[in-house]
Length: 111
Length: 115
Image (cartoon, rainbow over all chains, first blue to last red):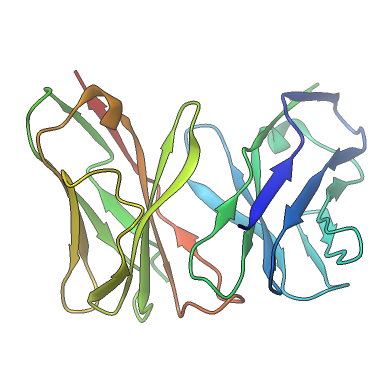
């Protein structure tokens, strides 16, 4: 079945560092890919998405490119801030209706 | 516009009691989903509705769990005879449709604690 694997956390970085959170997927169809973020004490928010190969999703300085050849959707940001501290979830959705989730990666940014 | 809302935000109950969790989706969204987020288990799909019908209930953990949706809008997730392992955050999401490109928008969740 479909699955999502993302790097285990926590990931700890200093402010203004470059961020990469790896995400790879297995799917039989042509899924859409999503990154959701959960800030402390808050609900899940859509951060960005891509619906087909080579699409790049971007939002709030974060980017991720849908790479079909490597079945990846890595999340990147050039310069992180303390306010980016959160748990980040990679997910896919194919012709089925439900989101298939990665385990989540906790990101800690130190000033 | 208004997002997905859920109530209550927190619920503490005693083992064996029944609880009802409510979800108000975004207006106009035909699809509604329930997920559970628990420590060590990650995010787990429970059930989804297309309109008022639930085509797939296979994610419900046991027959103590049930859900309904009325008027194509509000949904209620009911847990009967709660157990301590039911403690989790229950998340509701809605989307315009169920295609692969439809984005699911989440509510803030209901944190359920079973003592």
